[in-house]
Image 1 (tube, rainbow, N blue to C red):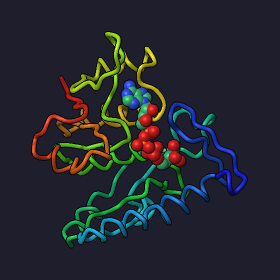
Image 2: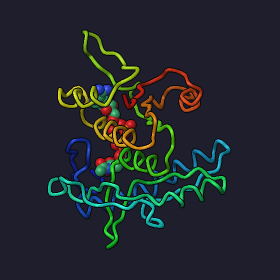
Image 3: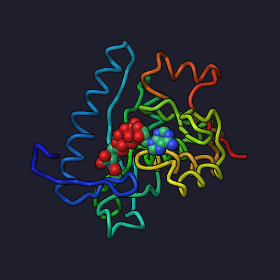
Length: 214
Ligand SMILES: Nc1ncnc2c1ncn2[C@@H]1O[C@H](COP(=O)(O)OP(=O)(O)O)[C@@H](O)[C@H]1O
Ligand SMILES: CC(=O)N[C@@H](CCC(=O)OP(=O)(O)O)C(=O)O
């Protein structure tokens, strides 16, 4: 953005999105970043297929409640999960860029965690794994900083209110809460720099933070 001379700022973890910002967001998220992820997955020998939420109206969106403040940021209204199932049935891992569209063709920038949560909910998966750059939800209650192995929805709400959960962690936990209210049984937040982190979660290792219904 800076290189292109466009200024942006974040409000509650969401990027303020003007038309000019939307152009760059779509170009980068659905273009270069999406293809980079696809190339990396293919580099491991797996098969990947990149698409954005606009393709096939995969991610349908509406303006967020605070759109007057943040602009073209979207909440997901519907996910055409049959497209994802179709891609997976063909043996490809879908890599979905978080850009949504509404019935009039308006594009929306959607936080990646919000989009992932909506995809997980609409697909009816048992578990969503959120990969980030910290070892989980951290607390400094009791003096030193530590990872919480498990948190409830109420604890999360309290931590947002107290400011202990802030910035980019907010859309992650909000997406987790939305998932848990549906069919998804648990959401696990883990550090992507941990080796083999996805298979370790799938095999039941206690790692990161589990968000459970309770
Ligand atoms: N309680 C918390 N525990 C851990 N990280 C937190 C917490 N509250 C806020 N954060 C911040 O959330 C960040 C992760 O969100 P974000 O930067 O959006 O990650 P990503 O780019 O992986 O989506 C962490 O790097 C950290 O700065
Ligand atoms: C509305 C909004 O904030 N969209 C995000 C989409 C990408 C994203 O969410 O990336 P992270 O998961 O690394 O934060 C953005 O424009 O940065």
